[in-house]
Image 1 (tube, rainbow, N blue to C red):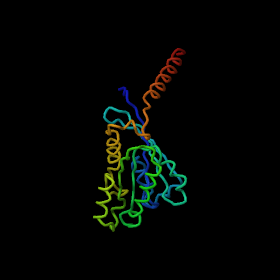
Image 2: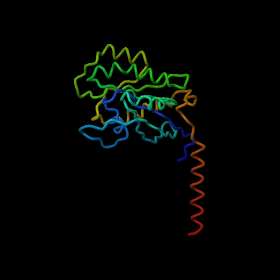
Image 3: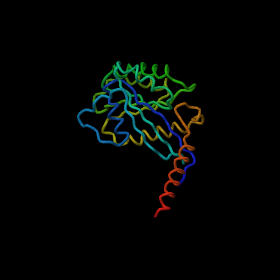
Image 4: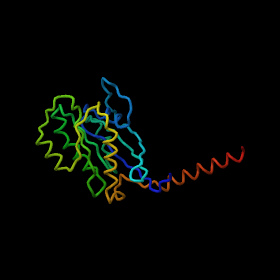
Length: 206
């Protein structure tokens, strides 16, 4: 089946170091993970995923960013021209929750769009004791209009949660005004046509 609409989205994962970003990054892709500990991301990591949502072909560029202070000057440029954010904290570490405001401020500083971006907030490691004040958490979610899920690396539905987040992004009526979204329909048509022409050329020699 041919789909006339083909768009790319840029989404980032951010938050403090050791909150589980790299593990969740792999689980979203349905990749195998190290059951003991995933190594901390050095700078950036990248993945591409393709979906069909609402009769549109979606190419998602997902960036996993390092949480260490020393990498902030590198990663902040990747916060530009995005259309969505996965923000993460560790429910067993109060500091990682308190630092969410710092990450939000950084995202706002680098934002190149006039509108706010959709945010998916993950409270990770819910298999550990939760030390986060629920009232503060709920107020934070409401204040910043976030989608929130408490998760762990053992969650089986992270792909579904992520795909629902992508669907939520593209349902925005002004989606094509976002600098983190690109219409690549024409580019895909040119590639498809080139592939057909190349195939026909080879067929002539059969």
